[in-house]
Image (cartoon, rainbow, N blue to C red):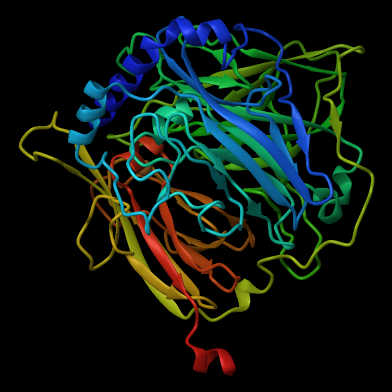
Length: 548
Ligand SMILES: [Cu+2]
């Protein structure tokens, strides 16, 4: 209910400025059933990518509030290309109108929605409003400091301009990342409004030479409210989806169109930029699942961490992508004899308390000899790969082991319709809703390597994400996983109500240079906004240890 109230306030504010917004037409959307277009590509030069963004809003014809990042030339949510070691300098101006005093005071009255701090603990604005924004550079191993990838205290309010200057490390794995707002309490509304874009760290061909020369297609899946807010079930999903801003609305699910040449090979770089919707991608030709030749997951080339600095391809016929997860894979387009070629998401069983993420098409692939190619091709230019960031993590001895768990509790246990509190808790501590003023739930030391067992004690799926670092998946439900993959997203499926809790065991790598406070949370953003997030603090080693 808290989220819906917040959303209602945002809709009210945006409606008030609807005429103005439509005049300047920010956040454009494509018609249902249209061919997908590639977002505009922006590249770093001489080690720096400079971007001017405005944060915009408008209300669409269905009453949904849209949000987006726009450049001065009118490009919406462009793909940002950087190289390892580059700086990303985004100057962000928040053009979303300030809340009215009435809605502002309502916001301040909402528990968990008011974020205030002192000048020493904040970064940008001091008090959160319904129009606050910031940017998280998801999956990047960049510093959690003010003006970089800091989301706990960074707020840019209406009318304000803020300068980001994000330093990418030299050993940033080459691959697909993404950017989105991360203001606790309103992140779901911002991301469902469409404020997200792709971020590519260049050089995947250095680790996976087989992708060199392939046309590359960025595919961004987003979700949004179903107009009219019908009860989910059957063909009515909890949220509608879109592909590169082409809506695929329920219940007809008219797919977007991807044009390809017959049997053409392409690198698809897919981000599930949904706030809440889990997808399970499958490519079907006349009903037969086709191979995805996977070369990277969550920005890390698959199988690249064994010391060879060479990625290894995995073949899959479907790929589960939690919200925020990425997959990069080679597809071969249909031959002319294929009558129906569809990129679909399969039904995801999210549990008795979960959402409805049904089977539905996303895109129909149309082949013709004169189909336009995507504007970018992976360069046929190779450099020696950097040492892979997480190399030999699998051989490290963990310095600590922890158990964490996801749980949900009704605010009023006697009223099944009361709001749900969402928690992520270190076993032994008291479940606590997130607040930026909370002390860190975990304090660790730079240089440590920790094994975390993360349990799901709730009756719906949760999707674990930690900022700043990737983790190595070690076990699922106590069974070792030996594919050596480094991820920043992992699903922990729902608990049935009896038996052991579903769990994953992951190895956290704090050996890198990053210190400071950052967060881990469920990346179903409705859950994160409702409390399912906590702070970890990485402190420098004590001087006497440093001398060793
Ligand atoms: Cu969750």
